[in-house]
Image 1: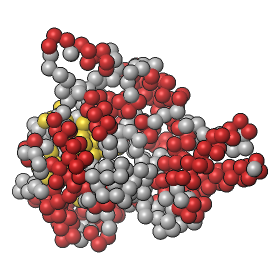
Image 2: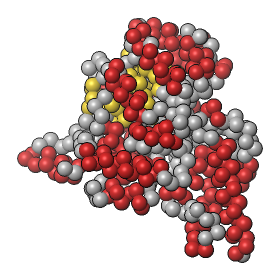
Image 3: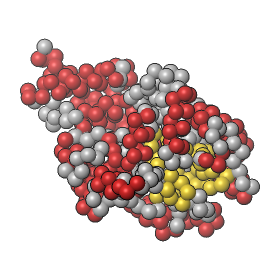
Length: 442
């Protein structure tokens, strides 16, 4: 049965309009399957405030538009709002606090994080100050879901410095006991040892939830992208076996699962021509019952409206649909895309390279099939010109891959374990060949 058929069926006989699918956390709280991610908040000029990626803007965050988002979300059953002190130039918590505090506190859940990424934030007193400031910015006296942020990012020693050796984790447990934190969890990127440590110490810390990167590509193929990654299937099943609810991040792989080349898109359109490409990704995650909520950074109102519709209610995927998504994942892995989710943790580059912007432009060209194996192919001249025009328009020359010196400072910061200098070298070589051919044609 397609989603359209399901909705048509429940709409007969004067039934109530579709409602958001809800899941229960460990304490019986009903949480919306769609979560509002506050990492890409809209700005007044039509962009978003997640710096260093396409569409990012230095313009003021549009508080009125954020208010509209929050109002629509709450009216349509979305009650989980995820933010961080590090999001949107450090303004996300303040903006979300203003928007949410206009509503009764019991009508929504706030998730935020101990984002103590800088070494000067490692000491316990500095970490405490981050927590207290989150309460102030969010205009609340407790946090519903509090996370250790990106526990594997930077390696296991960094994880120990940020949360263990300084006593921060033990202090957070006391805050949970005092009721200032209602649920304590962690988000995982990077070093597997950090995840394994948390799993091994679950009997001591009693994790209330865990946030992982989960989508139908990373489900079985995260290791295919990088051997140091952990497949989402392993992460999910490990957490499921412990009864730990799962919060999903990157259901669309930084937007890459919302835009496919024709070969991939046609596989999904054949199953349900009326379904949008992004809807398959959300339904995939929601099909797994241990998933508590699926986060999405929805800059535009139309994104929020579509995602609400997709999960109001969830129509779980049938096996043939899961098989089709697995085939789509395998097709996607055959192209030349870089597994960059535009999280910007690699930024700023000390030499000014726009790393996410370069990868985003490259990935758009891959999706649009503008990158032939032979750059000099005479049948692809228009595609070459289109790619170069897009690259030069999106990324200033001094910030392009050609200026990467391969210092490697970005490597330890990338949650996807991308060999950034190597990929920059490959992109630069490809672009150099294209420019060379263009000069010959002129």
